[in-house]
Image 1 (tube, rainbow, N blue to C red):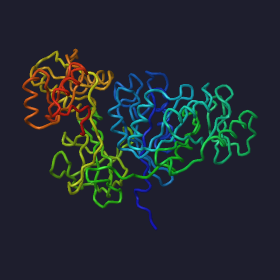
Image 2: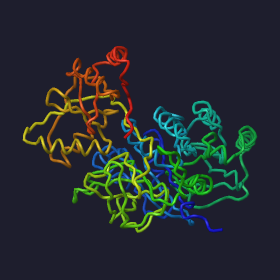
Image 3: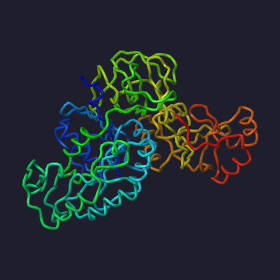
Image 4: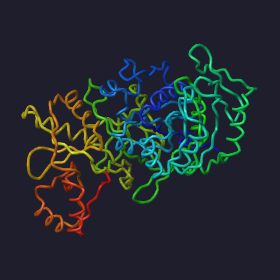
Length: 511
């Protein structure tokens, strides 16, 4: 029996708190997978050599991942699609949408810090979609917390069964390698840099203390259960050091062996299985100006079913008329190549001029709508003020582009001329100003808006009209011309909800 080509796909993301070592791990996975030949070691923030997956100017200045990159590599017949997610909490919305496009995730935890707030937030998103998680406890070559403490914290805070798959032989100054439970071998550190260069001690003698820990770990935690892992109820835990190459190849093997192939995706008409013959997919991200030489816009599509062939005509749900896709792109960070075919689970980039938007479903017959890609109510609202009023047209174009990417949301008040941008976190505002200047040559600044939050209004035309008559000064339209109530406080939202029971004040909107 031949297996379907999509069965060899593994589409996964790496989630972590900033500084837990995600960018380094991403690089080492690509290096081991043969996708890059030199890891640009990520040193202190502001180092000149940055991970190749971080390409935007502000990312290079601050040493953080702001946009979700996609990287594809192949190893031992398995195609890995790695989606790099912004680790910074201010980008939770972009990250949330990226997590809708993956089938599993690697959660990176710093051995000294354990589970941090951002890790918890991202984990909750994975839980909403039952995304299976492999845990990687990083930086065990430095002083950290006891392994049992970290395992118990994962079990308690995330309400997951944990199953250790490896164990550090000592930590920090006493670190002597990683014991792999499956083979019984220990990967040993070598040379002045004390990194893993391939030496595995097949018959190791463990220090008495470590031998005791290992016995306890194997007896005290449940055995690995593939079904429980794929259901999102159990996480296998690997210990290692991304910087020193410990545990990296074990992670690749675990993704290949345990992580699920493409899963059925939720749509309005029920789940769409990858073996459905019709080509379908959804746009989970739009990135403008990846190449400053060409003012390009690329929509990232997760293929859900069917075999995509270059030149095929697909209909975007937002447009209603078919579009021929002549130059779909497969990614490796900044390097790209034209994709002739793609299978379910693959991520392809579709160059376009604003026709494709986040949340769009693409399909051959235009009969499918994928669900679950929301917009969140912004937590910070600011007015955008131009220093040069003649640039109004450029500003409108820039705000529309950036809101399509999900960097910001934009609201056009019914009364007054200053447009309002909404974001989930402060850093998005810095990115907005930086990109307005760099990509659109628009010099603008932000000033406080008189609003605290925004709610999408859902209800009958009559109810909406009556509400707008009394609250004209607080009404705006979003980019899709949907009515939005701009509230001065959360108390205001509650008060209006009570007064207008026939309207829904929604904090999320399906894209």
